[in-house]
Image (cartoon, rainbow, N blue to C red; front, side, top):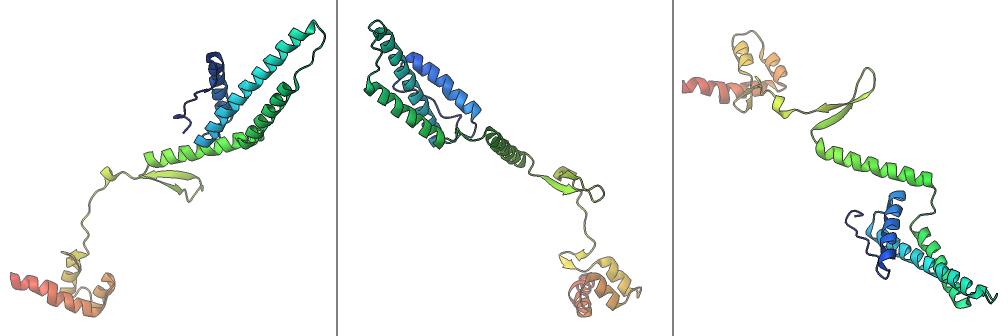
Length: 208
């Protein structure tokens, strides 16, 4: 959001707007948590109020110089009130924006935000990688899935799409293994072996 927000400096002179833009950027650098649109709008208003404060102080300085000769040196109460009200609003905005927070906490917050951004970017760029842990040293490492390295292997436990294993069937037919043994290897019942004989292998013989 901060990249798309443009500081405008409305209500300021060209010189003030340029100085305000630099101050706005400096605030963003020092306080990187100010990245929401609402925060940036408040930040621009803060810069505007700080510019007004400089105007008030400049005006007070001018009045002081002009009255020095007469030794009056009294600043109009209305000007002082405006300055005080403006200063109070500046403090209020800074509190809302969290500019009085502990710098260490802000730095920790920014590091946390950076970690989240890096993790999100890494996840998008490495969708085929998986984190695991070494069973010997307990250190984490990454497994990268390479789909181009897969080697298709035909399973011997199916006849077409049916669980059967023709090699075991031949061994069963030759008496090398029993029906019970054959069924246990397939993880089925002995009735299933009878079904294979009737529906799968005997049909094959009949077709020949």
